[in-house]
Length: 158
Image (cartoon, rainbow, N blue to C red):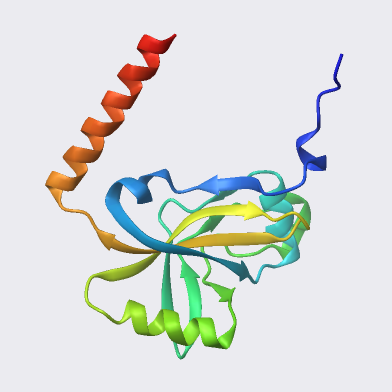
């Protein structure tokens, strides 16, 4: 009988939070992974699963990339050293990647949306960003039709 592997011991990524609405609202042109600057109490809260990127977005300010609107709940054991729950957090990318990304974002209709928040194989928190354009209503209806058709096919296979 094979022993069940613990999620903490598995190699690879461990998902913390996912923005499921992003793939419905936007066409994802490309995605990239960025580091994020966090405090100790934020990391502890994230390890407890107390993070949400549902309303988050990324924005360039003074040549730096910032994540705005991400919610990380307070870590109550941190007492008065706690963090603000919705503060802006700096994203870490190489300078050349930042320049390329800033050029792409300046084109009309393109935005940066966080797709998920995860631990990499070394236990470091990373954000997967998507370079996106907004979907029209007819594109959203098409997505719903495809999803319903796939769901129906899966139910027939059982």
